Image (tube, one colour):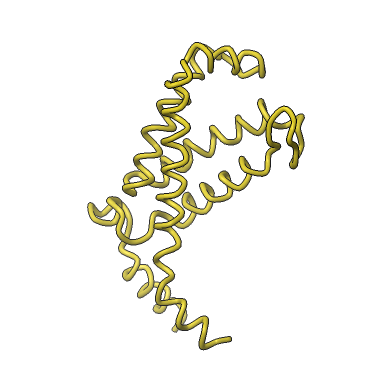
Length: 156
């Protein structure tokens, strides 16, 4: 088992990339979909769910999902993007899904997907964008190899 772990550790850098890009695509799509559906329709849904200031919350949510989704995909401002999207997911759980519980099918899915997305966002917020991100390229985040060296230094 240790041999397998050692072999897989060489590919550890892939995890944050997959997480960033997949979450980024999901949120980008949801933001675009809010404009395609009509912001006034989204505002009406937000109002019916009890979201505060639905006329402001609907377009801000859509814009944040688009901008932060793109930011995750390219890895620019990853921790900030993850935090903003995390706040949106917390709002979705509280205002939209709380009464449905964890698993539901009527009138919509429960909180399971929202919590999974939130878990991924928390992971990116805590661990950062990983390799091959704009954050790393412009120096907003330390390179993963530098972090690995620091960890080795701490252990010795």
